[in-house]
Image (cartoon, rainbow, N blue to C red; front, side, top):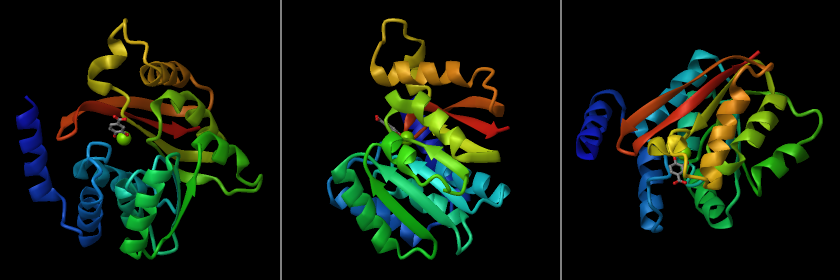
Length: 221
Ligand code: DHB
Ligand code: MG
């Protein structure tokens, strides 16, 4: 099935996803530096991020898990020139790659990359930090429940929260699987269930070039 999913993603991309030199350069530099591309979002998912941001006229975006900053480029594409992205990366090597790709992209929007554990950085943000309009959670899956709570604190009514990789080829249903990343996702589902600060939420499975996975989406009450 994987080959067909990849071919169909390719078909979708060739029809609906315009080529963008910034995105291509980011992928190329990531490959040239010897990093794999499976951690990056698929282009058609990047476009979905762009559209969610455009739909809601977002200006301030928070991203947890920068890696090569490929998804950051999609977030930036969606924003007006005076848009702002705070992106947080926990690994020094990934942060260096992400910063290099951000510098190369010469984006109009302000993109600030902070290095460290996302939860620590979120807690250390100044008390008067303006709420974010869109939050993309894509860092270590183990910490998703904590990231969800901290994100809700940095949100306003209507903020959209997107959590990547919440299906993991069905591993969330494997009872014998107690990996911290999988437990983290399960705890996130439990936390989202009837959460008093969430207006509505769902999760969708996806198949494509990145295999079988999915994302959760929440709107803040
Ligand atoms: C992994 C993490 C991601 O954020 C992703 O999109 C795909 C894979 C991983 O840790 O394997
Ligand atoms: Mg991801």
